[in-house]
Amino acid sequence: MAEKKNPKASIVIPALNEEKVLRECIESLNAQDCPFEFEVIIADGGSKDATRRIARSMGTRVVMEHTRTIAAGRQKGAMAAKGELIAFSDADAVLPPNWLRELLAPFKDGRVTGTLGSFALFDGSHLEDFLCATLVPFYLWFSNLIGCPSGAGSCMACRANAFKESGGFNVKLVTAEDVDLQKKMQKLGRVVFTPKAKARVSARRIRKWGYWKFFSFHARNWFEAHFLGRAESHYERVR
Image (tube, rainbow, N blue to C red; front, side):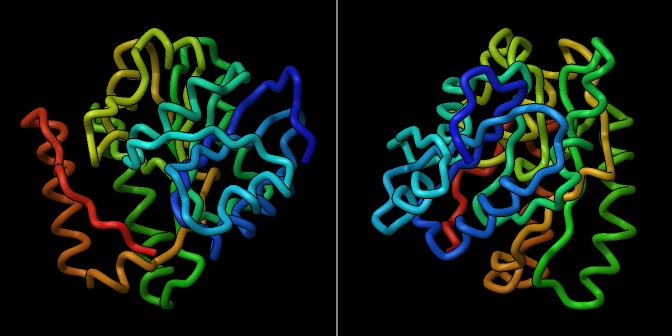
C-alpha cells in the first residue's frame, strides 16, 4: 500500500520483534473496505528481527521508538500520524475488512472524541470464542457506560486534535495506557463503544500465563487504573 499524502485516518501499530505475525496484520489492514484513504504506521521499538524490513516492504511507514514500552510506541506513532482520525491496534491482530470503517463510523458525530471496539481470538477454543462473543461485548459496553472505559489498545481510535489536546498516551505507563487515553477522551467529549469493530487477536498470552493469571492481572489492573490512579509496572513480553 503506497503512502498517502493526505490520509483521512492513520492506523498506528507498535511492534517489537514481531516478524512472525506482522505480515498477516498488515495484509488485513491493506484489505480494509474503508471508503477513504488511510495510512499505516509501524512504531518499532528497535526490533532485532525482520520486523522493519517486512513493514517497509509492504508499504507502511516505520518510525523508531527506543523506550520499548507500548505506551511510548503508540505515542510515537500517533505523533507522526497525518490523519484527522487515529486508530490503534497491535502487531498480533488480524483485522476484518469492516474493522476500520466500523471503528471510525461514530466520528460522524462531532461530539465523539474516541471509540473502542470489541475483540475475539483468532486461535481460541470453542469456549473462548463463546465468551468473546457474549461476555466481552457486554463488559466493554457496560464499563464504558459507567465511565470506566476498558477498551483494548488493539481496537480503539480517537480524533487527532483531541489526542494532541490531551497530551496523548502517558509514556510513563507500562500498562493501562489504553484505558488512560480513553479516560482523557471522555473528558473532552464522548467515547463510544462500537461492537461491530472487532479485532481478532492472538491468545498467546493466555496460553503462556494461564486463565487465572491472565484474568486476575487484568482485573486488578483495571481497578487500579480507575480507582487508585496507578497501573501495573511490569508486563512481560510474550512472543
